[in-house]
Length: 315
Image 1 (cartoon, rainbow, N blue to C red):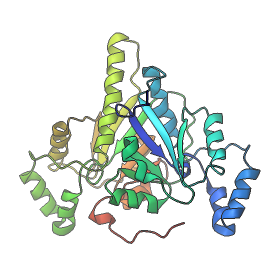
Image 2 (cartoon, rainbow, N blue to C red):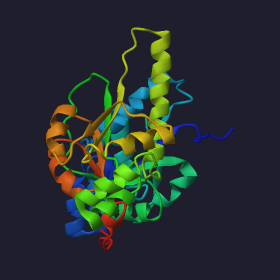
Image 3 (cartoon, one colour):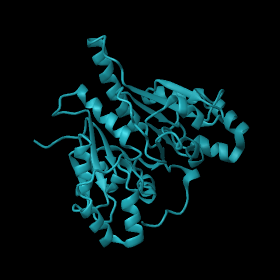
Image 4 (cartoon, helix red, strand yellow):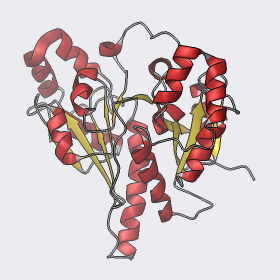
């Protein structure tokens, strides 16, 4: 029988998001592909260090203890621009780090994001900005990881995920109103449409799949009162009252939930992240992520008009 992905949370991860490939990329950029191949072969037995998305992936996979090992809730698949030979170091590092990742696609010099629909993926993470932009422009849910690798030195098992709202969970329709009409025009528009749900944005389905795992946790808690809930979801948005009502309406209409909501009204999100300490934060605006990425694994979702620009050249 084929291995089915339809009922799982499936994440695609580039090796550049999972591991810190700074040294390898420097060799590639400065000396070319053949030197890069030689470098990877020479260092094949050296474990790669965790990258920006490593804590998120490790903790997400740990939630598979809620399911049968042969029927996991979460599936993570490597989507890599490496060829199979140079990808060996990535797979060996996955094994030595104890990550339950056994599936991978290696495509020499090409991005495999086009396979996302075939693999039922609700998210693709990469440090390659062009690949992410191309995926998002094609209607696929993808994010560009930013910042330095995060020191994940706690073993509490929790996983905290934070989302911006507009341009991430919802479309950027209201953001476009703000860009054209300013803050007062935006507020008037949101008050007038407070009971009208937004159209779903690029990561709404990812949240829905996260909610399914949360429901499984709640089932476990009902059976075992000593079970401690590990997965927590927040929205952290620049909206404030009276524009706060429409996101709540939208989430309810979509049938998804969050545990916490921060309506900040322009307060620096980076300061909030220092306290909230999510293992990953998604936002559509790089201006917000400049602050958060100093302390928090941050992901730019290049969706909507504000992110329209020339696609970066191939690297």
